[in-house]
Length: 277
Ligand code: DGL
Image (cartoon, rainbow, N blue to C red; front, side):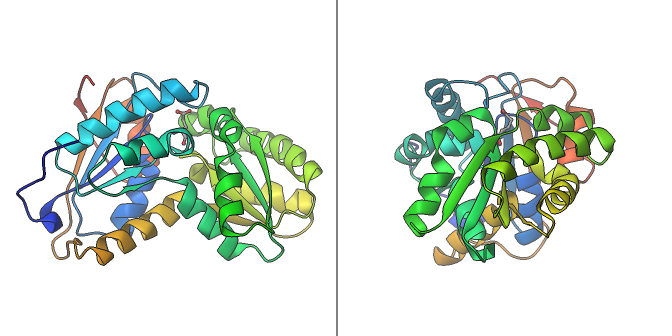
């Protein structure tokens, strides 16, 4: 655990980490919801992807990422990576003196708020789906809800390639969602349980609507996390208002960052500092 900090909590930054650059979708949502907050972001780009790795490895990598953020005196840790949230949240909370918010619980809350018939679909990486974390989080909140989860590994490279709204993206979305909807044709809410999927929300929404023959509500855990962060800071009177906050970005490898990062952040971003964990 880190030593207690001497700076007032409101002045300290929010820490966000991810396996790579996809977590910038969470930074984008946080900067929109909490514009006065400083944010420190770490992308473990040297070790991405986490989604195909074992829970032990993901936990080990995630603890190193969190340690880096705690050493920068953050007041709150956001685990932007759904895979890390699904497999390492208890260990990360145990190791942190500040609150830690993962992607799964906010996503579960939003899904339950959105669904009308309690039939929820979840898509994510292989590791997220294997963990059963969304099923557990939703069952803990409402045992009468039904969750059907499917790993969609091709969606991460598509989002990174920027192929997010063309016929290839739509064909891949249709292929995955036809499998999901065959398992539960009544799904009315689909959780995007991965950092990269908000970029594909348009094609996923369209494919789901066509296949189901009715609208399917898309829930994006990035916005839900930002809302949780706002509430956590409000409850502790640790929020910062006023001038726009700063963004400091770190990565464990800098290859392709200049091309990929703005795609996920939704604004220009030129400086990433290279770090070794
Ligand atoms: N950040 C990961 C997630 O949200 C996707 C990329 C990876 O597999 O590392 O699950």
